[in-house]
Each structure stands twice: as C-alpha cells, then as structure tokens.
Image (tube, rainbow, N blue to C red):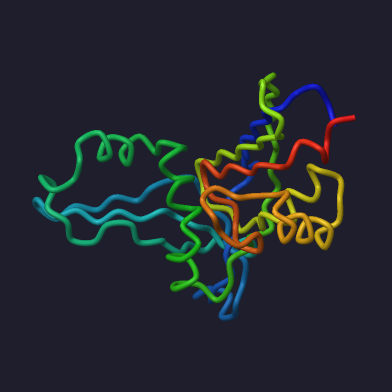
Length: 193
C-alpha cells in the first residue's frame, strides 16, 4: 500500500437517481428525472411540498410528496426557506430517499455515478484505517467498494474478514450498503511492505 495509515473517502454523487413510474401523458411506464425544484402549495396555513420530476419522453410531471397538509408553524423556518429557494442540497437529500421512492415508483435507478474524494493522513497505527463519509444514501455495497480500493477480489476480502484481519465499525455485514461514518480496519501486515 503506502506509508499512509488513515484513508478517508467522501462519496460524492454526480447525479440524482432517476425513477421509473407510469406517465399519465405517455400512458406507460417511463423514466423520470428530478427537475431539482420544489413545488409548494399552501391553503391558508396548511402547506404541501413536493419535489418535481419530469418524464424523459414527454416532459410530463410527477410530484414526489415531501410534506402533506402540514401547518406552516410546524415547519422549521430554515427548512421552509430552503423549500422556497429550491435549495439544491435539500432537494438532493429527498431525491436520495430510496426507501420512500421505492414505495411510490416501480423502480429506482440506484446505479449512480459518483466520485471518491480521497484524503490520506499519516498515523502511528499498525493498521490501515479507512473511513467513508456520505451525505446521501447510496445503494453501494461495502464489499464492492472496499475490494476496488484495496485492489483485491471480494472473495479474498471475505476471507480476510473471516480470519479477523478486516473489521467494520459498526459491525455490519460487508454485503450491506455503505453508510455514513463507516470505519474499516485492515490488519497492518496486509499493506506494509
């Protein structure tokens, strides 16, 4: 490996996931992309908020529900202004809520292009420590990404875990999805020359 013992990776999405659902104009299942805009409707003091999606074929719209019939006083004022300003980070937060999207759509494209921003820090540790950070939920398996970073096969990765040479904190299955603040410790003998 290298003289660096601590690697941090920030997983940065390059796009918002598209969804497949029925388009009322096309009269069939089509792909929808996120317009990166909120739609806000208020009736006196009650507010509804949606994220607007557009059909890739006809530009018809579908609205992803965020808030429904919520009193304006119950909405955090900072969040409300983010809705009003079409705050990109807030829109992306809702657009990456895969569990919510799957309930409302036929399919969610989770094969998202992403960038890994790497930072290397020296440490006095005899182990390699890898930390992952991500603002958004990703359908990205831990074992797949870790094998790519370490340059080994997933079967070899599993063997290292069984042999106690690789540990995850929190202790979750490597076939699970990447979570924010995941730490992976790899025994020092594996990467020291």
